[in-house]
Structure formats: structure tokens, C-alpha cells
Length: 342
Image (cartoon, rainbow, N blue to C red; front, side, top):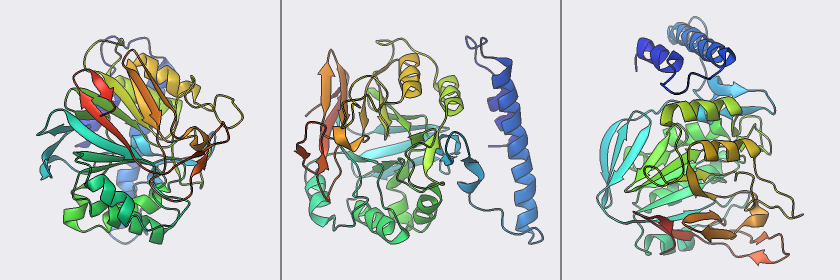
């Protein structure tokens, strides 16, 4: 994308959103100036006279309310179409569309971190289940070695694998690990952080990567998001009343406030800003991975399905009721009526 097009996208406010404050516009202009400065510094760095310009993730660091990397502000680094398994993945701007089968069946789970375990058996069962794609909600690996092992195992599925980083995940480490993948594996494993929508047949899945405000992030470079990032996402995909358009669901490590995220003490551990965002864009439900104490919890009423998935392998999570939640994937079907269990 050229700089002029980027400036237009950032500054232009869609019709119907004119009530945004001048502060929002000022923030957008500040973002443009930051990008222009980054381009200048990056160009200088490329000639060797100013040192390294750093990774893309490092350029998106934020300090408030807790240090984090604004993963939602990243730009997609791929475009066009590729065939993986039975599906065709088509990327246009910030939308990734899946086609080739209907309805679409998929598996979702959290990664194994903080545990380092052999994923052969667990992922073998996923590959044998007949799903069309896989979603992994954070906890990919706490160090370079375990992260590389997780990505290698996921690449062996030979299915599209979509990553939604969470508060455990170091954005700088993940960026480097993805860059190190062989081209054929890299075509199958996609970080959804910079994408607005994963369009799975008749369903829109809206990925929100990271920990709210960086809170609960494991390191200062963990993926996170703020209210501004959610506001920008609303601007791009548009508001919607529930029941209008394609059914929309969140794909998010963190759950919104409102029930399913009740933690081990019984308190609501969900994020209020994420709940407001979900209501604004007409979200019907979602798939989450945090808090782990809610792993395995399902809410399904009137087509509003939400679930907190379990880790794929490692030690079981201790649930809020004191029971242990067994490890393993959850399975879903995305059809005309939304998301359901197969």
C-alpha cells in the first residue's frame, strides 16, 4: 500500500461515523506522522548509516496501561490466493476469505504453553478429524525453541492454521519464528493479528489478538490492544445490529465481560471494552482461551454460541468449580445459521 493510500485510509472517517471526536482524528494524524517517520528512519537504516530499524512488531510498542505490542495495528504482509488442503485462501486488504467447502468444519484450542510437550498425538487426532482448518488461540510457546516446535508441529497438519496471539505470546519472538518457516509451511500458517475478518463461508470471524491494554501480558512485548485499536477496527468493518448481515463471532484470546469469563473466584474476568466493541459490531458469540479457569465452558442460546477452549496438550486447567478441565481441541461447524458444534 502506498503512503498516500495509507494516509487516506487512516484520516477518512466513513459515513455514519462523523460523531468521532476531534481527539480521534488527532490520534489518526499522529499515527500517520509516526508511519512517515518510521519510513524515513527505515530508509536511513537500510543504507547502513543509522543502524537497524528493528522489527515491525517492535515499531508497534505501547506503554499504557501496561507495556505491550499493538498487534491489531500491524499491516498484512501477504496478498492474493493460495490453495491449502480443500480450501482456497484469498486475501484482499484486511479480509481473509475461505472457500472450497460448505459448511466449514474447524478445530480450535489454545497452545501448550507454558508446557513444552510433544504435540504429535494431539495434533494427529485433529488432522484425522476431517476439519477444514484450525484456529490456535495463544500460548504458542514461551521461548524460541518451544515456539518453533509448536509451529513445526502445526505445519505438519497440512491444513490452514490461523494463529490469534494472546497475552502469553511475545510478538517479536513470534514475528521472527514465522519468518523462519519454510515457504510451503508459511503458506499454511497465518497470523490473524493484522486481519479484520476471517470470512469462513457464511460466517465472519473477527480476530482480536492480545491482552486487553497489555494487562496479564507475560512480557513487555506481548501482544495487546487498547480502546483506540478497537475503535479503528470498528471504523474499518463497520457497525452492525445483531441479526443483520453475516453472523459475526469473535476469535479472541481474551473474552469480553459478560459471563463466560468468570474466573476461579467467580468474578467476571472479561474485558468491558471488548464487550462494548462486540455489541457495536453485532457480535453473536465467540471463541476464547482466557481465563484458563473457564476452559471448557460453553454458552449456547438462541444462536449465540460462546466457548472458552482448552489447551491442546500439557497439564489440565483447574476450573472455577474445582474440577480439572481435560486438554484437547474443540470442534465447530460454520454454516448459514452461524457457529455450532458438529
